[in-house]
Length: 234
Ligand code: FES
Image 1 (spheres, helix red, strand yellow):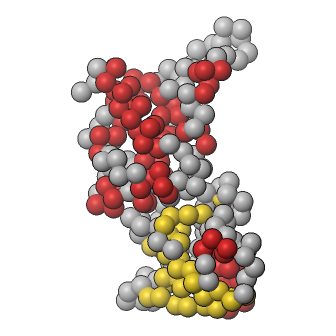
Image 2: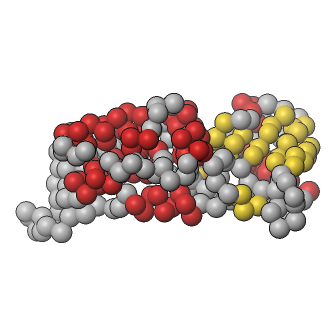
Image 3: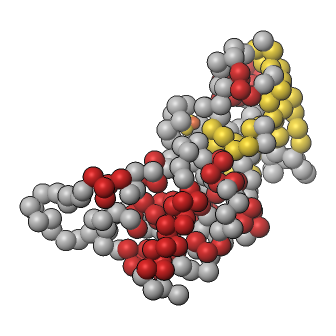
């Protein structure tokens, strides 16, 4: 079948404003939107710019606004997208070119949350830090984040003010806050209690809808606020 791909193009070095361009490509229902973008780039217009790496929903590189919703281009199939597909860069981040956005502010927010285990104590058996299955399950959901930014770039609070750390950073903070092996919980909670932290969330659920991993993001945000309360942080 023929599919029309409407792509919002923008080259800040050459264009005064973003504009739409249409491409017709031949596709199978089981092709992914990423396959169609490759068709355009490889056979029609080599200047089309987008980011992708694994092509299998693991690396989080190719989050885009497809048919009005944040999705991974490598996971969204033509049979679900239809025969006219619109593709835009994710929102709230500066467009570098076409579908490629500047992710540096996103990484800066993530770094604030110290996304790594903190524990300098020697394990009791000298070899490994054990935890119960129940303790491990507390961060099972949030440990599945692939840092694609689909959630943060779908958040209206983030659109209006990029100083908000955003849902992806909170998800990754949650992953360590509830980890029984981590010793930096208090510091993590103080970071999340900052005016630009977790309290900025207005629970619009855009992030939940956007997440390609179906992470229960608003549940994680709620649990972080509960931990802040239990720690008596104001
Ligand atoms: S290219 Fe890696 S998640 Fe899509």
